[in-house]
Image 1 (cartoon, rainbow, N blue to C red):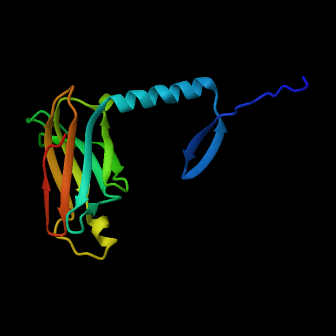
Image 2: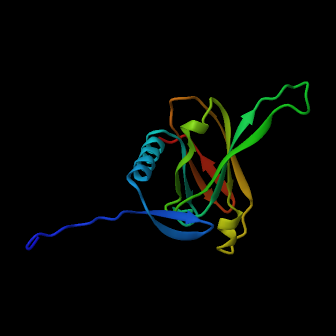
Length: 162
């Protein structure tokens, strides 16, 4: 085989387990499944958000956002409606979460996005008036909902974005 070269490509799958970053050889079937899952998740956006700190004119990174769905219970039973936690995520360095809820978890109904802004302002040694902000929205299937949130230590504003 003089003069011929042979290239070998080894693909590794990055796995995060218990806070450790590990590299494992990936078989074609694992890669195909990972690609399929990524394709499904990116094509089925349902709820996203963008948090901006208007007091400094910058994105609010690392804000905890928890998504709840209102469950309607029998009013004759104990207390009626309750909020069921569906997902929890952190805003990225641009203040965004592109996918708070996947279509597999989505149902028509009322959702609550709870923005826990205490840690964000505490890290900056800023006293804020609202420890968390609840934004409650009505959502229907086959639509995408973008919920921007503008925050400052003593106020906030939100609207349905695109």
